[in-house]
Each structure stands twice: as C-alpha cells, then as structure tokens.
Length: 147
Image 1 (tube, rainbow, N blue to C red):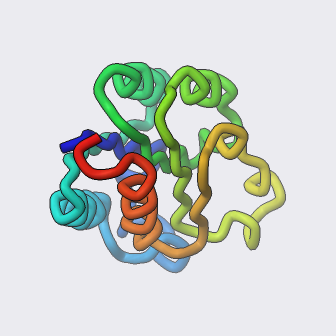
Image 2 (tube, rainbow, N blue to C red):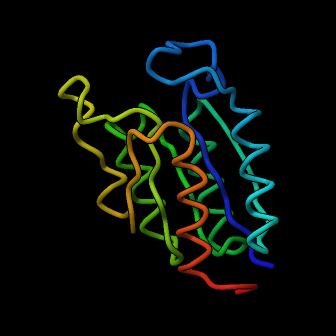
C-alpha cells in the first residue's frame, strides 16, 4: 500500500464557508473523507494536510520525499507566488498532480500563472472538489498498486 500526500494551501480550511458560489458548499473535512475512502478503494493510504503557512507545506513536501509515492497539491494562493514550493516539489521524485477547485483561467489574470504547474505531472482545475478524486485516480495509475 503506497502513501499519497494530499496537501492544501491557505484558506482551504474555510472551504464550504468562503465564497461558496466559487468553491462550493463541501467542507475540507468532506473532501478528506472522500479522498480517504477512494484511496482505500484504490489500495493506497493518504496523509491529508492543510496549512495557511507556506513553510508547513514545504516541510510536508520534504517529508514526502522519504514517505510518499505521490503528491496531490492544491496550493491555493501560493500557486501564483511561491517559488519555494516549486523548489520543494522539484526535489520530490514522485508524481505530482496540481488541483484547483475553481477554473483559475476564468478568474482574475494574476491567477492564470502557476509556479506549481512547472513541476506538476498534471493539472486539474474547475471541476470542483471532484478534482481531488480525479487526481487520486491518476496518481494511483502512475504509481501502480502497492508501489
């Protein structure tokens, strides 16, 4: 059973409460529950984290180097600003899938650029919280069973 890290950036702790017209009404706890159930079904385990602090996301990416077969990351606002997260992801050898709940390309122009995309093996945007489940399915196909 491989371990997959699911990492979430700033303000995602407010999912379901903050701008539900953009991000929906599901909470991050709902997303975690669904991800855990799917990971188990796929024969994998997940470690699910959220932080409003850039350094914590970087520390988890560093931890994933030795512990995880892949990473699903929704870097939220750090997507557009964090070279440090990009550098950390570049030091991770497994596959990385970037997820965005909203379609960032239909939003403000500053959201159109992603540092994380320079490293990501795939990007899912605009599919709501279902994007997390799609990302887990893709990672499972990339890392294989029990890798």
